[in-house]
Amino acid sequence: MTKAASPSRAAHPATDLPTEESALLERIQRDSFHFFSEYVNRGNGLVADSSVAESPCSIAVVGFALTSYPIAVEHGWMSRADALVLTLAALRFFDAAQHDGKLNATGYKGFFFHFLHMTTGERVWESELSVIDTALLLAGMLFAARYFSGGDALEQEVRTRAVAIYGRVDWRWMQNGGAAFALAWTPEKGFMRHRWIGYSEALVLYVLALGSPTHAVSPAAYTQWLSGYRWKRIYGLSYVYAGPLFIHQFSHLWIDFRGIRDAYMAGKDLDYFENSRRATWVHQEYARRNPKKFRNYHGLCWGLTASDGPGPLHKRVHGRERRFLGYRARGAPYGPDDGMVAPWASIASLPFAPDIVMPTLKYLAVQTCDPENSFGFTASFNPTLHPQRGDLGWLSPSHFGLNQGPIVVMIENYRNDFVWRLMRDCPYIRRGLERAGFSGGWLAQH
Image 1 (tube, rainbow, N blue to C red):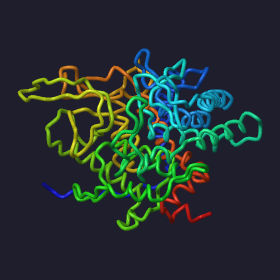
Image 2 (image 1 turned 135 degrees about the horizontal axis):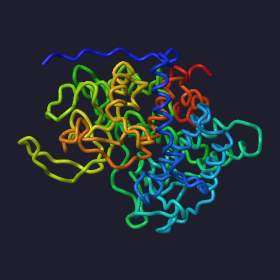
Image 3 (image 1 turned 90 degrees about the vertical axis):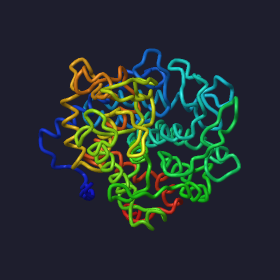
Image 4 (image 1 turned 60 degrees about the vertical axis):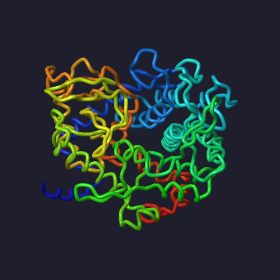
């Protein structure tokens, strides 16, 4: 086995793209954004978790939608007035929602339940009061507040309500007597035993909690979070490990980590952007090596993350017993892996590693092209299961907001730093980063 060569670091923004590539990215963004205009309740701004019939709202998906509306305005897919209507509908709903802790309430202590009824806004599926999904929702709200900066009453209302909702979150309560956050809370069982410790998508959560204007947590919370990091060397690259690619992407939707470092990363002479670039490269290399011999894994077909699946089921394929999972967070190189490829996993890593993502994006755009699909890429496919159906094999029948949002946002960040530029001047993000010990780069410029 040969030693993997280190990839080159990406340059940004990508202002000199060939016309063909620019047009392809525009089409992918537009098609992916279509999910948010199709599955939004215009009366309250809630957005469905998926295209499945009767799907509830996912509060994280609302955060992605609020981030995507301004991008749609800038590209001409939506008017500023329409984006403002949808943004205010969501902000008014969450600002007025009851926080009494009842079983069917929308939220409690400033946090919101993970899944809400699309019409009533009440908790469904006995879902948890989700600290991470609340953070993703708030990040979208704070971005909307940065974008709608006009002096008229409606744009002022966006800013006022976003800050009010953010300021209402009682972050210290969710610490449950400790430093790191409890994983979640339910009215039936109280706080979950596990905590947000160790590298995950919760990086943005700690930044928001440290930057709160009302209930900010101590930097000790971030210190405990760092204590669970796992530093690994894989295929010749060393980085803070997490298996699924979404972990290396979600916080980067809003925060530009290029050139800024906390104490841990400074000690490794690294930043989180470079860390995500290395994780992305490991995913492609894992597919190229294909240790489990899945069908159609190669350098242009790769990406493991949270995705839909056909399972749970066991099936013998080409003389080998295979176990296929349902919706699951898949990861590389240590799994779980059942042969499922999620196009959004690679595409949302475009800013980190365009040298390997752009060829994959072009390949997938051809392979997954379906004239009847108006939402861009299929959510996931498994070439190993049902290989008689062609190169894609099993296809997910649904689309998910958690897939669509990162595609829209990260392509935009790759093209022009749009979300990153606006959020660099968000005072709460800046304060949270500085209290977490980040320094250098754009943080030192003001």
